[in-house]
Image (cartoon, rainbow, N blue to C red; front, side, top):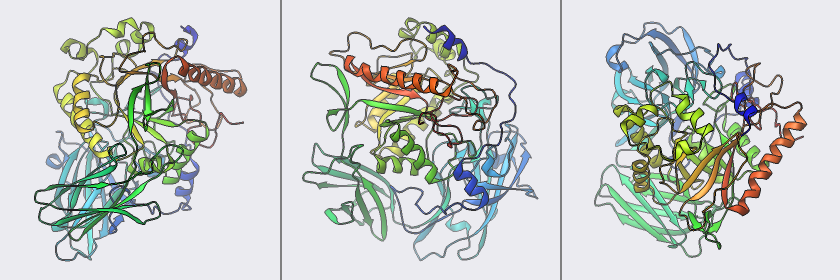
Length: 609
């Protein structure tokens, strides 16, 4: 064990200074008005023509919370809105124009006017929020449209009967965010942030948009493009049965490849379309087929890809990750999805594409999206660019975590992790997951995240729990996810506290020599090093904080580069000994952490000369 690195990387609490203002190139363009307008649909996998963005400047006001957990029941709208906020950036982010924390004992109100589009008979207007942290109540012209709780998944309200089409209408949103004062799923956010914990953000942090839809319409889409079966199955949930469902499969240039038709006698209907010799999707050739789904007067465009992902034995009987039944060594990098000027919100689609491109240019074929559900356009870019994704679920639980239990003890002793069950109530207390309400919420969010993202071909693994943070009943979680999506492998417990379930033995190794355990031949689970590295280099003028945090420091940039490349080569060499893949920590610096390959403002690629 490298004691020096372990001591350098110990988690600590300390008085943190305010971050320095640090702008990405895309955030700076948005701030100065030179950014390109957002033209892509917020959900390219489920797109209709008639939609409009509600991003931009809204009025806002911070008011004391009168108490209680439901803002719609406990507060009236303020009479004055004294500030403006740029949506979809949280008030804690530079790009919001606000620059202050929403506290657990406050409410944040948003307000804006907009022209509702004119509706034809039988049409409805939906108001979409792609993510609001954490609980909110939405009002249209002073009347309640609906409420939602949960900080990472999209939701919508039918506001047709509350608006006056063709006229100015007022929208208002009241937000409450307890952050880590309550055990809800929150990811890396912490009010007292520092080291590996980042600025807690709140409010609207993904797109807000309206959509004009037919009353009788497609509401949900499940696509299974199966090259082994030689067909694509499109299952659709509709608002009302009785219409004909027509599905067209399109080539990349828009030509019709095949069609299928079925009549919806119930609210669920499916169409199976045979496809001879489908064009397979891979990182080298990310071929996407288009889909056109028509139901009555409703038309939705989408896409799909033919590919399989599985864990299969190689010729020596060692389990490997396989894409299209061929072993593929996973060269991954940890992607936190934080930005110096937008926090959890990327400043633009171009910024998202730049991160993916930088990872690919550095030789990685996989991104582990860490403890965050990203905006839908990010997965669309990965689908188009051929970047594989390991998708984590969002962690939570009672704060603060017992760092001896989830960090120090596992670091010192692997044996201590091997026989620690997560289905025992006293153990769940030590893993901060004993609250029944938290368990129910995490399970709901996990299942909803899988349903939301399962059509994206880039996602090749679901990651459920990380380092024991809020971990409980991992075996049950695996079974629940498998029931929703039997097509992808599952990393049940990344790091430690392995319960012998899922499709990977998944180890974190920051302070010991990298190794592959004995006895992999004949196992049903592939072995991956799902986190390692964390080598630190602080780039002067490109960090939010003057004092860096990481697992090892170096005398020069060249020394750091040699160490990173050597460690990556060491991990790659273990493929011959049975390693199925790795995840290097990490893609970019984040706040105090300066162990990224890119600087936090994305202006410096540290690994390239």
